[in-house]
Length: 222
Image (cartoon, rainbow, N blue to C red; front, side):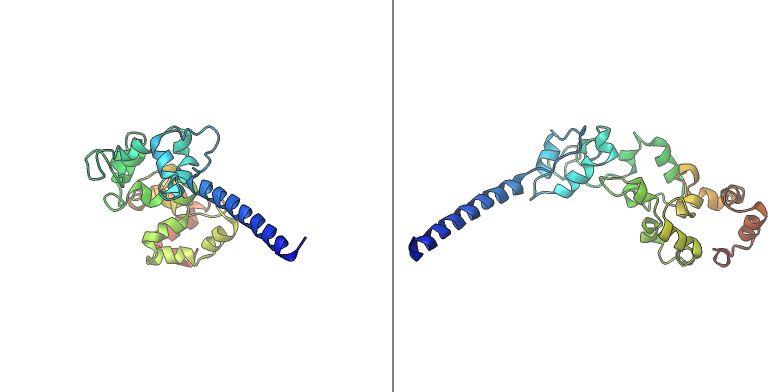
């Protein structure tokens, strides 16, 4: 085969490969993220927002959430934007009032504490996944409380180091002391020394914990 014919054949093959992969790329750009087994994604919000040029990350993270597995879809929290994003039927950033119908106790407790009016549920539970693991991690608390001497004391303490290295269950965290048993009123243990002592006593002797609480010198013992 002449050199010219070889070059022509090579160019033809290359063009075919580029065309084929180009079509595959175009198809991929339009593909909707695959959803976990058992999650219904055959509804308009997911089909639209799952496209690459819209918000596929939101669609994917929702599909992996407990909400998705429980059948809680977009309109349960956001309402309907068919009449416009400024209509009274659509809520772009849902607040506690949208969570209350399903989580009445948690919302009631939150609104009774210092967080009331300052944070939304999604301030601690990341939007669309609403991950408990994230909400229980001290790092999420530090997004608001990083400048606190109390928080810095914990962060730089042995207790903080143990948590960072060994992970959950091996050291007390913010929620251990301020949200015992899933209590969402973060002020409860702050206002009730007996309750706080009960929390501390899960890991420390009553005498030691009582003395530390009395003096307030947590940084010396962390």
